[in-house]
Image (cartoon, rainbow, N blue to C red; front, top):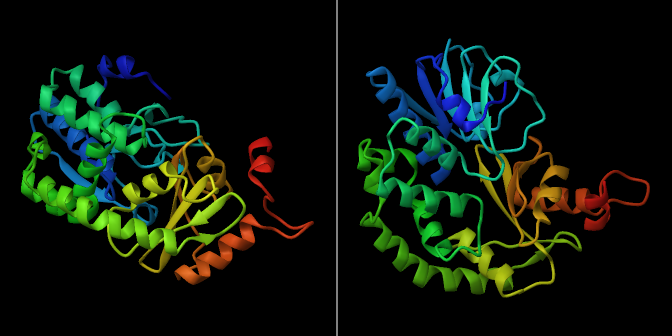
Length: 316
C-alpha cells in the first residue's frame, strides 16, 4: 500500500529492519540511507546494517530478508514484500500490495526520509541544510539560489565515493556540512569546470533534433551540462552524457523545461522532468556503440520503431 508521510510516521506496526538498503551512486542515496539507518537505530535501540547498491547490481541481489527498509531505488514488483518499507521518488508502474511505499515524485528520497525522521524528533539545523542541498541537487532545481552549492555537495559522493565518505563521517551525517573536502570541490569547480565546458562545446555530438551528447574529461559533469543549457550553447533542448560501468552503458539526460523525461522513458529509463537517465541494453557495452544505438532509436526510419521528434513523444 502507498501511505502518506504523516500516516506512516504514526503507524505502530513499524517492523525492525534487518538492513537498510540505499542507492550507492549519489548524494540522495547517501543521505537518505544514513537517515533511515539513524531512524531504525533510534526506534529499535540496535545498530542496523547499511548496504548501498548501484541499480545494475541491485537488480541481481537476492531479496531474502524478512524485513528491510529501502530508499532511493526504483520500486518494482520484486520489492513488494511483506514487512518491507520503500521510500522513493522515482516513477514506477507497480502498485504495492504487500510493502509499505512512501512515494512522492516532487521530493528527493532524502527529504522524504527526513520528514519521517523529524516525526520522531530526529531533526536539527544542520540536517535541515544538508537535506535542502540534497533536494535541490537531486531534483535539479536550477533556479534555487543554492544550486551551485548543492552541486558541490553532490560532488562529494561522485568524486570520493559512497563508502569513502561514509568512513570519514562515521555515522555523523551532520559532518558533511562544511566538510573540508568541499574546499577541494570548489577549487576543482573553479579550475576544471571551465576547461571541461570548453571541451564539451567542441565535442558536442548531435543525436537527434532534440538531443545532443557532450563529453568532458575533467570537471563536474552536472555543472558543465547546466552551463551548456543555461548559455544555450546548442539549440537542442536535451543534453545527454554517457558513462560505462561493468560492461554496461548508462546515459544521463538534462533539460530546462521537462523535455528530458520523455526521452528517458523512450530509452526504458525514468527520473524527473529535467533530470533523468536510463541504462542501455546489455548488448551495448561501449560509448561508440551507444552513440549508434541512440541515433538509431531517436531517429527511426519511416515505418520503423521509435520517435521522430520530441513533439511526437510528448503527444504519445
